Length: 358
Ligand code: IPM
Ligand code: MG
Image 1 (cartoon, helix red, strand yellow):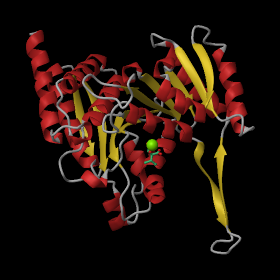
Image 2 (cartoon, helix red, strand yellow; image 1 turned 60 degrees about the vertical axis):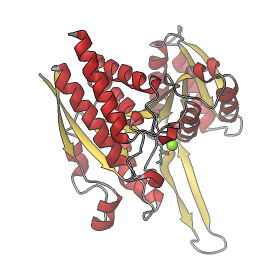
Image 3 (cartoon, helix red, strand yellow; image 1 turned 30 degrees about the horizontal axis):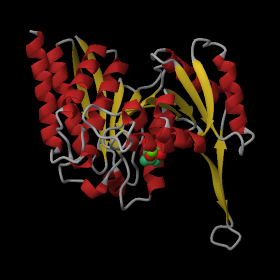
Image 4 (tube, protein in one colour; image 1 turned 120 degrees about the vertical axis):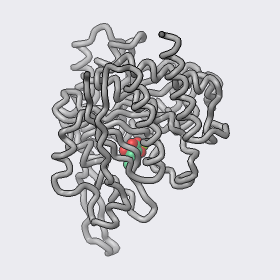
């Protein structure tokens, strides 16, 4: 039997609620399929843990994490810890330390879900976010602190190797999709060094993928295209910050941030990859039991696919779509369902799938 070691890091806010729902669904799938088993270990790394211990990741923590096949991550961010401290304390050390340079963010309006766009059905995108450098490189500083002449710098770092590998990754994804279309997003009119290099390297890499149609859009312009002509986009590749912003817009246009999944991949598999819902901690609903677990289920499907369990991933996606089509919605989607009732509904659909197949 194939066995995968999963590191669960529920983290903050609604993270523990959705990760526990996700694990319940994963265990159901593993139990039914019979082909694979999950060995799950929980890591208590969170902002509460940080406030108690003074660190998010204990010494040797990354080395331990490295032994796992995948990381199932909830959310990080708390009201009593500055956001930049929690981000640089937990999520970025894992994503950057494990060279998870390819962040994959699919967006699509699931059956039964209402997009704020009239033509929302046309949304079927994958946003590829550079996830290891750029605006998140951590390169900058503060000088003359507290004085009227105080200065803050935040330098985006783009390396040829970093840019080339994310473009190549995006082309590979685009090539496998029916429309085979990749849109390059930068801001190379205003930013004439790093961004122009992005554009240049993109067209160099494009030569190796003659069957992929390409076009180019400035980041401000692509927001209007996402809203007004969603059918003209397929795969989008953009920098760390640009794609961060575009993927929130994509999630909102797809109906809810409570649906959007993401995978932080180390495509070479030298390190484990990390899978997380996009939504974050969501303190306003923490502890109320109404967090939408769909983003985490979709995330779990991406994790299964990465682990090589494609049939299970497809079954899970089909179950998710059946549930949304039936209108089993948490409040973010306008319904009254709870995290638990959506989870039960999915597990029931999974059980019915097995009965049907038998
Ligand atoms: C995301 C989030 C994070 C990011 C936040 C929590 C720092 O918005 O994954 O998109 O910007 O990377
Ligand atoms: Mg974001």
